[in-house]
Image 1 (spheres, rainbow over the protein chains, first blue to last red):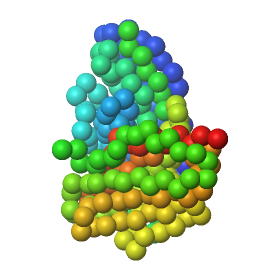
Image 2 (image 1 turned 60 degrees about the vertical axis):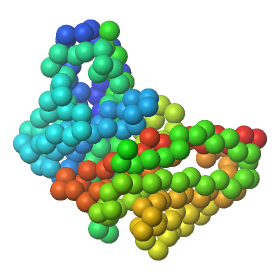
Image 3 (image 1 turned 90 degrees about the vertical axis):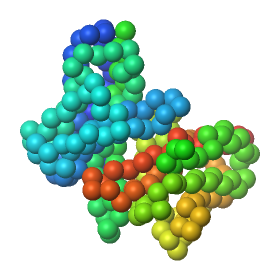
Image 4 (image 1 turned 90 degrees about the horizontal axis):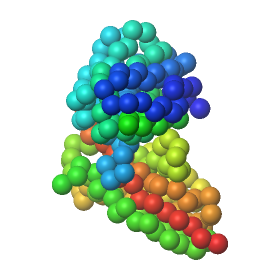
Length: 114
Length: 111
């Protein structure tokens, strides 16, 4: 258990509304990541963070923003949700053990945009 | 061409069978390799890292062939509980420690 929680776990929203998903970790990991998972596409990186206030874009960052004001929290915001953002969102942390970086995932948030 | 490619399956096998999954990756500079397991409607979980010399964890054996850019996972004596999607994952030696995921191979073990 990597001590990662996500909230909310499920959300239904309407097109055009803002949505914020929260990822919280309890073990002071430096790196945190947001992914989306869709059928036929697998897991794709949206944004990641390498420290407080340090973030960078991933493969599918359009339409998303992130913030990390403290080590334990990494927020993902959909400024104006669209139906194409209906997906399962996973947060992950990076843990270095023996020099091999591995990632551990939170339980996911299922988002439906109507 | 996808950066990490896997046969999506499904692989339908009887209990007790041996099954092998393969994965190819495109970036020869890739440094770290992993197999993750994902159950339906759950998060991916690390199954095992893959080392150059090959490694074994109980019924699971992982192999890496850097020359062919190929990774494999062998499951012996399949159990019903092995039914899941297996994700091949590669760290392509980038600054953000970003991982690239294959689309996954679905395994269904039948009684």
